[in-house]
Amino acid sequence: MKKNFDINEQGFSIRCKLLCNDNDKQRRAFDNVVVVTHGFGSHKDTAGTVHFAEHLTSKYKGFAVIAFDWPCHGADARKKLSIPECMTYLTLVTDYAKKDLQAKNVFNYSTSFGAYITLRYLIEKGNPFVRIALRSPGVNMYESMSNHVSDEGFTKLKKGKEIQVGFERKMKIDQAFMDDLKSFDVRDHEYFDFADDILILHGTKDEMIPIDLVQKFAEDNVIEFVPVEGANHPFQNPNHMALAIHKIIEFFHDGLA
Image 1 (cartoon, rainbow, N blue to C red):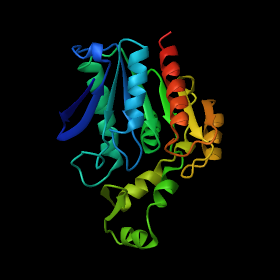
Image 2: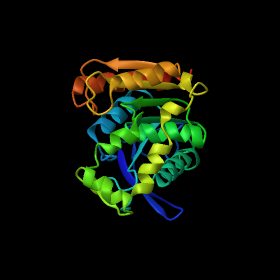
Image 3: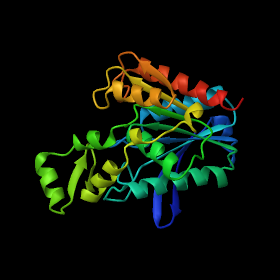
């Protein structure tokens, strides 16, 4: 079952999708909720998110999935991207899972830019999640985002102007956004306190986030690391995505033991 809804709090309207087993569609509470966050330029309605939710909720009872659009992504109404607003979105969605869905356990499955926000959230806000799975995490987010900005774009930013970035949907960023990204590199922080509850999966053919950077980050923080042979950044090959989904589902379920 899929249900679109909005979380209207603090002047924001967060576009969300609740996914659960059809047998649970009348339920208003779930013991276990997975918050799914997407990458830069993506949205909540990806096939990978749907497949993840279908596999999870068909195999294990009492689970539901909430996917949502980051600011300026998908159906979100905002036009200018900022890290503080992304952090607020993650807080409000997690709070919704706990309060409105009465979740005893909240998990986090995040990809790329979403994984960067999650890792930053752990340091700046604390950890509300039982377990966290990161796929293709943006451990070098500033450098990766810089690849989306032309020399002309950087010149405009330095002059105090806004520029547009993105893929299917364009969004505004300014120099403050880039400075904010540069100020927080996840590789400059320690994650030992969270390591046992984090799983990282990364493709050996990732063309956006080099696998050696991610593997080193995982090793430096003693985080379980699963390289997926041949997978690219979005895990477009169905077999690669199926492997990732299986690993993540079992990692989450084991966290309840």
